[in-house]
Length: 144
Image (cartoon, rainbow, N blue to C red; front, top):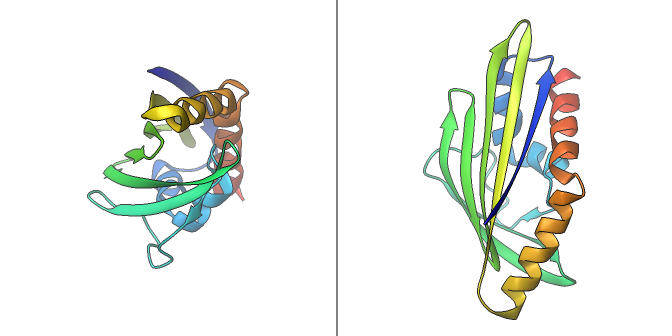
């Protein structure tokens, strides 16, 4: 399992950051891994919720079940399970007039050839800076 982390100072309170993190509409704009929400009725992620998302990875359409473990007090923690599994955590802490946001994504290989390919492709995206770009997009969305 490999883990990537990123930090960003944003000009918004932790509650505003959490609102952007838990909005499924906003998440499509900032997510480090592009996806579509399969269930259009889910508007906000909350602790204990599960949503199904899908997207393109290694040239194939793949699906993930997203289980939200925590969504409150400036924290979002979830697991996305599919051909590759990702443990994701964001935390926004008050800092001056804004927040410091930390992000962590751990990637675990799924089974079979597709799992190995998906793990490699996801790792390549994260290694190329996708998590840092996601943090920049979050900062732009809450500072607008």
